[in-house]
Image (cartoon, rainbow, N blue to C red; front, side):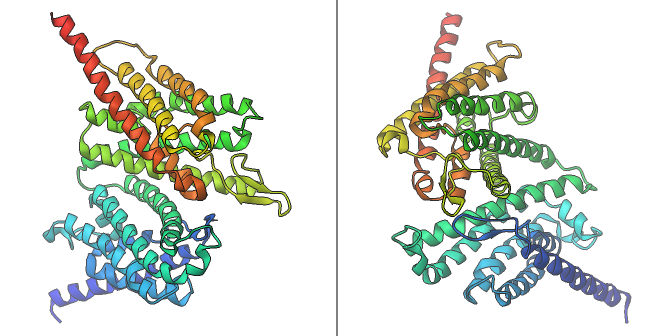
Length: 448
């Protein structure tokens, strides 16, 4: 046997044995339950992480093989309902991750990098995360396609006229929660494992991680306060407590993660900064993705903690007879305060976001000195808009803050979600354009 053949055989043995270990870890993790989603589906502790690491380290062909075996195990175990899902739920989706890693490592370096974790670490994290999103989108489409057939009898019971819509919401809710956990673990793993090369993306990763943390804290503390004290007209003190909870989070985060990412923790703010030329399109989308993941993670942890502690979600509906939550609110935004009026809800969110964002743009404008009070001013402005807005819509002014609770609570919050995405973005864009015009007029006057 030649030396080259011996090396080749050792490589095959290493890939197969490593695949077996990753497969075993993935299967064990897939059996562990973190929490059940309101509409069904179980969120697990990043069960597909070993498959991702393996696919990135060894390439798309090997990634396809292990993902296919994992899919078969899931089918045999009863987690997948049809053979159709074996291909669309895991296999094709996670093969995309192998392609990501394979494309990121130079051809002559694939076999020279020792160790699976080193191969994973020396791959672009941005590319891995991007392909993770694609993989989960493929999983979602495959699950939706099979769910149209198998969930039709449950759609009506859940209050949905269409089995397609029910399948989209049902599968999307827990897959997004699963993706949020996966993204956190990927980022932590990437930052912990040392790298043999200079990686310029680490600075970007730190900014995105800061945005994740900030949005997580915003939802966890802000929505958690609303869940604990309630925000109805009878319990008026809940208005003030919730308003200050959201505002104080901004103050705390502004003086912590603000040093890293600028503390946007809000896609509307990021959009205004992009329009103002203060961030790139790449960073804009990176911020938005991690803000949404932070929101979903914060809402998921709230639901879990309130469930295990037996606390009543004051923003949801509690079944006294069953002594359990009939439906979770999770501090989600709805149009209940405007009698379901879409125009009214859109206007209040647009105006409040305009007020909030134009204050941010003014405070952070480098041409004017506001000292070290910027974070405090922005936090108090958020308190201000919450005090008036809670009675109308629960106050969003932040698409990410609305997305997480709505996805996990479902129902009316999910139906109205598009308003709390479109209106804040429109308000932020308007604020950016108006501030640019009025600040520009001030500059022209000074020059004259």
